[in-house]
Image (cartoon, rainbow, N blue to C red; front, side, top):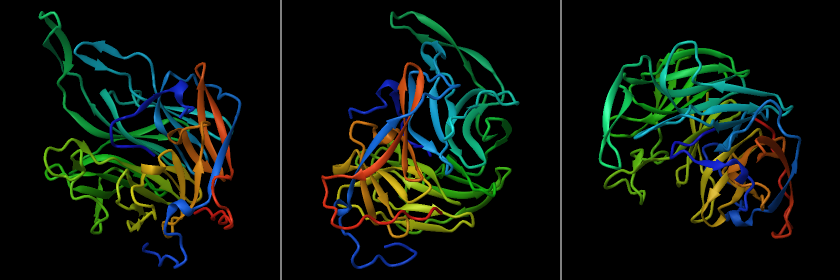
Length: 389
């Protein structure tokens, strides 16, 4: 439900924008151009503000959801330690909002065991639990360090020299902390997911050559087995240059996210021509190749209990595509106009688009419905709504 690239924050008041598959051959009469898919306009209706939660000025995008329509929103609480030259922001706070308006919080800085310098790397919400991938220290070994102030004089600040390690924190869906386990599986883990059975899925890269690694973990977070990518399903290295060539100095990690999809987990390699990878509980990997026109790529996926809904980049940036998970065909395109930016849409549940506005410290749900737009030729009948997985 979350990206590996630079964390993007947006002022809450700006959430309303002014701004061939492995399971069968694609039919011969399938659309060869995603622009031919019928265009729909999404109109949103404001609902009553969410009670029990005071929203801070900053929220992290994109939002996420689980299959029951519960939205998960990451907030940046005010405060934090401001001590030049180090700024230690407070831990991110994950909040859930159910379709009935019930809310829960998941404070990663308050587990039973004492942790220091907690930093969230990723989280994954399932229908039964929420798991966080964090980096933290088990103890505090303070040391005073010096730094040069802008005026040239010496200053001091306190630093914790204790080793930081990777841990998994587990909560139930009501926000109750359950347990913690150290994560040491032989590669740098950047994303974590959990299947309904409790088995975990970990994605990251090799510490030496930065090749992508995908592994199934036992419930106790120990390694179960590695999964092998098929040729062309993942980059040779997760470190890339600005031009995407992989040559020269590496400047960023390929952005990736986990998205729940029925009993499976989708690995989405954002903004690339690489396929979407559906990972089953048995460890099978199925590549889904979205049938997009030249220059358009999947930016990220919106959780849905139906087909795949993708935010896209390129010439259609700002649009949302409904993609058939069976063969990658674009079934419909959606335009949200100025009502809600695509990154602010949490999920598509039972055919309705869920987003949030942020007004006067409150979250205001926005529920959108899609209607045919006059901007496209609708002589072809819109496809029937698919059956949920």
